[in-house]
Length: 376
Image (cartoon, rainbow, N blue to C red; front, side, top):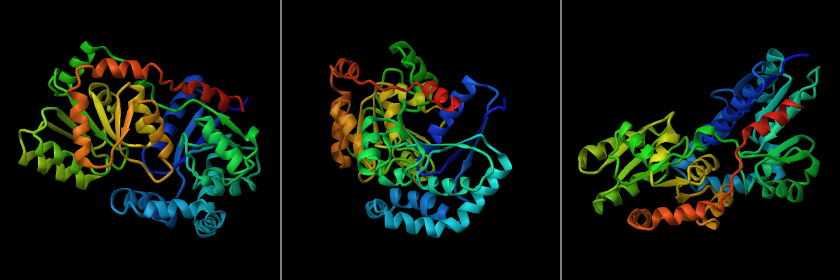
């Protein structure tokens, strides 16, 4: 029997798509080490698709936030989806076809809705059978473009997502399977107070000092600088850790801010490989409601303050945290600082959070997903 060979197609729009791909890749190879898996960006570098989706995502998340609601609402209509398909097809289909013919996969898994229609078109003219699966990385409020194609196999993270596909987008119910959330297993393990203090010391933090984490995925956290300015004004007595991701400008500015205010206990990172450790040593986190970041922080049983969610797309993520009383939605930096200060100075904080997290169930068994794909 021929060994399985997977191609995973993703885009760099936030961290959620590629992180899910990496988790699933590890799970599949754990189940069957003979499998070959290759991760590939679904659009050619420096072409229109790359500019519209990857560069565009960074632009409207960090600099022109009003652009996303417009793009989102346009994308909900089939006409606009067809227009994009027409514009991007001439550069994307030949690129994907060349990769598929060269790699000769048995299976393709797509982690971004913008790439799905082009893969489906290319597969019509490939002279061997390839299993094609789309993994929908938005857990709750799923944009319609995810379900643009009706007759392919989808995997989603919740019944809410499945209902959108079936009831709103007319995808046959048998084409959609609900799966566990794809998350790095490093976030699953809980640590004791002693382990937490030892880890803080190892990473250069005061063991017994409260710490808040500011993290927003691959593009950093919008509004992080304003939150830190409020910490400076109010002479915050807790440590602050900021993960800037790809936002090098913000990272440079925050380092200058730290030099100007040496009494502020401020720790600044770009991309990190130990996010799980930083989440585990914090007491609460301020985040954008991206699915990967939200679920990783909640899996470590840390409460979140959500300062932003992407128009409608991340609305369900925010509601999930607030409904389960493990998160707060606060936009204004001044009020965010007040909530952080209130939480960290609440003597019953740890007990309250422990009780609330007991009722939050997040299935993150990626091995189940690996088995489903290997059985195809």
